[in-house]
Image (cartoon, rainbow over all chains, first blue to last red):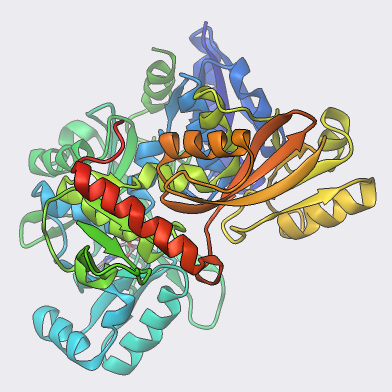
Amino acid sequence: MTKIACFVERYNFSDPREEAALQNFRCAAEKLGNEFQFLFRENIADIPKYNSVFIRATTDPLFTAYIVSKTAWELGLKVVDDPESITICANKIHQYALFEKFDVPHIPTVFLNKDELHHREISRIFREFGKPVVIKAPYTSFSRYVEKAACETSFREVAKRFFKKSDVLAVQKFTPTEFDWRVGVLGNEVLYVCKYMIPRGKWKHGAKLRGKPTVIWGRTVALKKEDAPRGLKDVALKACSVVGKGLYGVDIKEVNGDYVVVEVNDNPSIYAGYEDSRDKDIYTKIIRYLSE
Amino acid sequence: MVVSNIDLTTEKIEVIKPSKFLGTAIKDFTLNLSDDYRYLKTGYYVSLHAEVLGSKVIPSCENIIDSSRTPILLLRAAKAGIPTLPFLVTDSVKKIIAEIGFPVAIFAVNPFIHNGYKTAANKSALYRAMKSLGMNYKFAVCAQPLKGEMVSVKSIFGKSEGDRVTKEISEQVFEVFKIPVCKLHIQKVEDKTYLCGMQPLGRKEISLNDLKTISRGIALISERGEPFSD
Ligand SMILES: Nc1ncnc2c1ncn2[C@@H]1O[C@H](COP(=O)(O)OP(=O)(O)O)[C@@H](O)[C@H]1O
Ligand SMILES: [Mg+2]
């Protein structure tokens, strides 16, 4: 019997489909004869009582989730997401540098540091990528700090805002598609495949409505993983191989028949009726992985 | 190779500025000197760049992150035999009172505060500390019993001013985390000394004397080729 702690924050229960997914994990764990407890922030000191930790709260080296992950890791527990995966995935500069180094096909990217925000450099980037370009703060998640810039003024405005927190940014060629492929990967194997549709008239899976703070998300269309293109799955596995052996969600765009990686996420979203709708066994597989 | 955002007093050693280093691709042992190793700041990206190039670098990204997160600093330090006090990571005032009591030292564990700590001798002071370091109770904090006196010392390549035990802790912390310049928070309880926290050493806090110590440290490393064995 494995004692599994599932680290969550209150917000993990605010969407009923996410809450249902969390309950599915619990059921899968108990069916396999394991113990499954939700671990909240006030009880981090209880980590040593468990054999493995499954993190569902948003991860970042600066968030509590990293403390949980590294503590579990140092104590020799099995942990998803492991600290190294968090460190790589939570920082776009880190992961894109690894994609570059290990030839993982990805969207053309340059890094810009704080002292390079001047006319010559901005013009060079526009010449290289055309207009608009996409600027990303390295710590972005849920599409929050990914913005387009079509002229120098807006480039400077976005970059200045993102430079407040990070001294290096990523700038990319604008590569719009109708959907992002999302490939779920666990321990070097494909777990599920879906399409994250981009809302009509928008270019990000999570898009803001004009003048409103709320984000709307495009539909999720799941495929049976056997039916997904081989080339897609190969690129996803290659991208994960430079990050680690844990649980990931790889975002991939299909551009003129080629698959290019947008990013590898640790801590991928799992909502009941979405990612799991074709491959129902994802809960059992993740629990098995945690209790190996 | 020495990358530094601190102006050094020596001319004997060739020093590259961080922005220049980020634009190069030279694979070499890299010593990254900075007065700001915070995650997402240039000091962090220099080590990241070196690591991706496949170079050995001091400090490593892992150590930069871990040494700035107090609970991980303490956990790894304790594992390495450095004296630490029991600590509690929580956002619950009640739990701190029940499990640690008063007086207590509170360190921030959130994305925004990288400096210092607060002490509390009673409930209302603890609420105030939690409110400010927990950013309105939104984030967890790291609480440690306050049994003696807190002192802060500068540590440069593991060298610090102070008594023998303080010097020893400073050396040991450097052995584990290899942060070239930092400030350590230490607690002295009767004849015992404990590591409580670490924070960046701001530029204004680096004295002329410290610059000399830094230069000596670099010279030593350059001479040996490989730095302080692992
Ligand atoms: N270079 C690009 N061109 C067009 N769309 C992009 C580009 N980069 C990202 N996007 C889209 O923006 C959204 C968020 O991007 P992503 O890199 O995944 O950031 P996050 O980590 O915030 O999710 C995704 O839907 C992605 O397809
Ligand atoms: Mg994404």
